Length: 400
Picture (cartoon, rainbow, N blue to C red):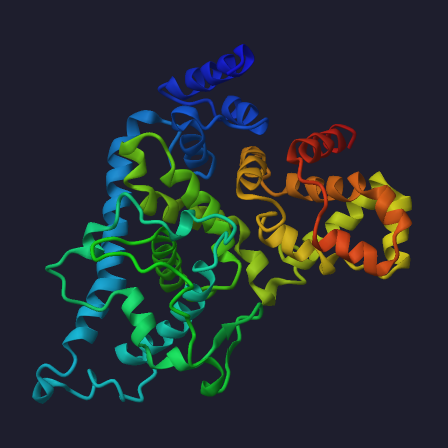
């Protein structure tokens, strides 16, 4: 470890040791990357994502309250419905029309239960393949939820719901518009091949199961948006950062802390996932066009080339912006980019600059390429050095 890096760690420790943390100072430090050592990154993200208050004296009661609240969510939205499902049929004579699974009332708890299963299946399909190039999410967590795995609770877990649901023989796909499509049952009789994931022993749960739970609770609490494919790519890096925190007292609460940080991030980013807002000033179309507007100012020749080839910004920037570049780079590089994005007080304004920088850095290839070559470049971005990209984006910002 270089002397400069050690000094940088000390700067962070000094900033984080203040009784009342100076947010402006912390943002300036975080903009150039946050050290992993000592759990500094995980702690900084919790502050930058407006989870932890800047007044450290409030942390202990605040964290207890939030983590207790998350436990309550687990009880109300997973455990209690699971107990009710497990008990179905034990005393048929006591089942009222209100309790009956065939109750046609759209507000009945069983209708809600079956609708939840549709969302759960989509979440399950996505989280199982989260970062497939690394084994981390398939491995068991050191801190499985004691509430969920309590042997005294005889109830249907989310995993069992997926395995036993009547929708198992149907491919359920919730697309970008929030529309749920169900294909014919014959096409997906083996929805989850047994070799797709390792079956863990009783009392264990994989990291992907924790992420699934976070997304399911979020969908239940936010029915207006529920779950849209891609949210798994947003929650994944946050959970990974928190659950690899070297500080045990933080790491064991990674699930609850991730849930609230993800919720805060989605409150800023959720408009990108809502189709009805696409063409509004806060929607994704406006942001995609902002990348080309920025490019018009910074490199008009390159923009002209892309427009001549009819390469519209939605062909590639939709994924870049909606998923905060999480699918364009390896996880450690995504985390480094997010250090900078989270430290920007305007949050996603700098993301527009990063996207513009990515285009300018491959300008010679784009100017030389035809439509097919250029689309391939933009959908499979060739530069992996995120430091170069972030440096270029900062340079663009400084010359604005």
